[in-house]
Length: 104
Figure (cartoon, rainbow, N blue to C red):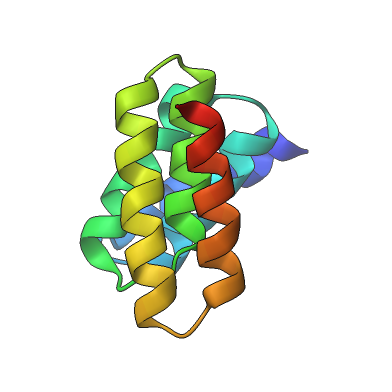
């Protein structure tokens, strides 16, 4: 079932590569299957297309952490903190700050 959703998202992206919402949906499905490398790639592409409020940065950081890319995970959390604060989500920013502290 999850593979079918992934294939559907991929077809939709092939039709409209600039559809950020579809790209985010694909990344979430990949994360569920622990396909962290693919998920990180999709999240990075999404973040070039959308003014994310922080959530995608947190997901990206978690995927990078699982891949052992700790410096990149730190950078993603830092960007997520900035985005969350910019969009008025102090609780999310605090969550990312705690996660960042755990990486140090």
